[in-house]
Length: 162
Image (cartoon, rainbow, N blue to C red):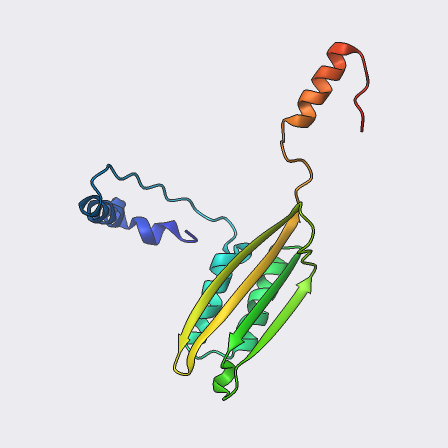
């Protein structure tokens, strides 16, 4: 959650209510683990849902998209792409508008891209929002692999291949 304090409540009262309601629905034991998202501005699901909430409150779609893009880029995203589709601005004919900032390499397999979709139910119909956030490239799949290579090289006396 972006704001875990809201979910937990005062002295954990709200989380206990949630746990008891979930326990009545399921026969097994319920374990809740609430994790704080450090930078909600670069989490695709929260960005898409934030834009959807703004569209429901009748904020101009371009302003909502551009504001979300600026805050994501300011907080360390390498690139962001947001697409809105539907009866934008209450138009009779539906269309799709997309904005990009930075780079979003969709074909690069090692790119760390966070993707999410959200829907905004407006008076004119549903507007779909898609969000791609590029957070950088994943260079080493296994973080301990490099250390293991170095240890093996030291024990055998052979330099590791680069």
